[in-house]
Amino acid sequence: MATLSDALELSYEPQKYDCSGFVKAAVNGLDDASLSLPAEDDADALIDYWSKNWVVVDSGLAAANLAASGKLVVAGLQSGEYSPKRAMGHVVIIAPITKNGPVTPDDLYHGEYPLAWGGDIGRTYMSKGTLSVGEIFNKSVRDKVRYFTPPIVSK
Image (cartoon, rainbow, N blue to C red; front, top):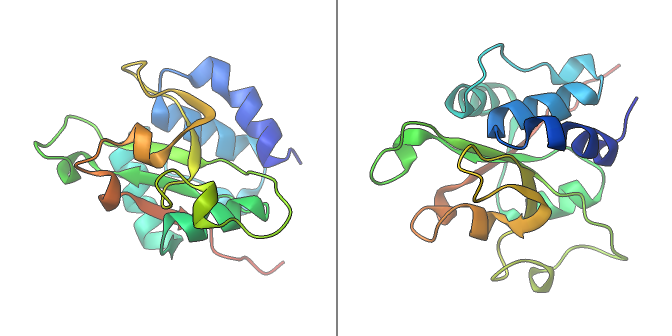
């Protein structure tokens, strides 16, 4: 099974202009049947699915720590959560950073926003883990971004 870092790298170039396509390709690249995603390709549908089937992560700091421990963490904002409403939502995967010890607010953009991987149809906010959630999502909406991680599945 591919690591998350491998899946992110392999999925980025072919999907860098499509946020939901990138997220789906990276998750599917993990080759873990418990991580199946809906067939719909848009960000709004993915966020609906995660809201109903995955675990909500309370903050960017908690998301960064889960990702640092090797867990998959996704984040997004639906089209209707933007003001004014947009035609499409946006989704990303939280970057799995490595450091000795837990991630602290000092490691995050403005103490709250973890780094993320994601594609972007507009080509402005494509990120290979170099932009934070606080930079990818503009100031007026970045605090509305929701984080999710898959439930633990007993095998």
